[in-house]
Image 1 (cartoon, one colour):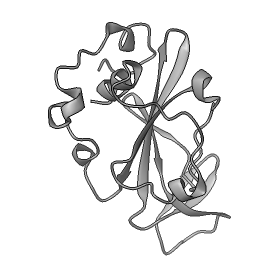
Image 2 (image 1 turned 90 degrees about the horizontal axis):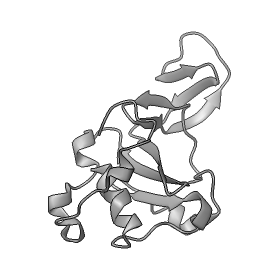
Image 3 (image 1 turned 60 degrees about the vertical axis):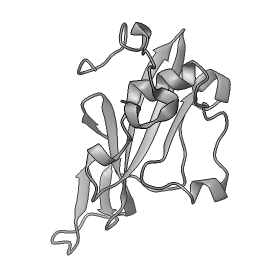
Length: 155
């Protein structure tokens, strides 16, 4: 599914994100928001959305982040759920978002997909299936999106 979104941007069917989001645009990020950007065309090497995220965890071909309220000094017996990694302790935001990112190389350009979902919704609700998006009907994903990538799992 995610490869279809990248392919659609590559073919000009859907737009790439070409610049950093404005603050008012960042505040509109919600469940189902998806952004695809090309590092060279956009001049962006890192995505910023103004939110605090836990350190990444690997899930399949994605890096997954959980929205945090704050980074806190370590103390035992915290009353709320903490996410602990070697980069510190993070107080997870109740009903916060999950951010999933993946990167693919297309014609020597690194392209990134960033997708958001509500933590309490399943991953199946993250994206509409390509058959449910009229612009993606009949879209053929090029083998370039699969070959010569560093995927942990074949798509």
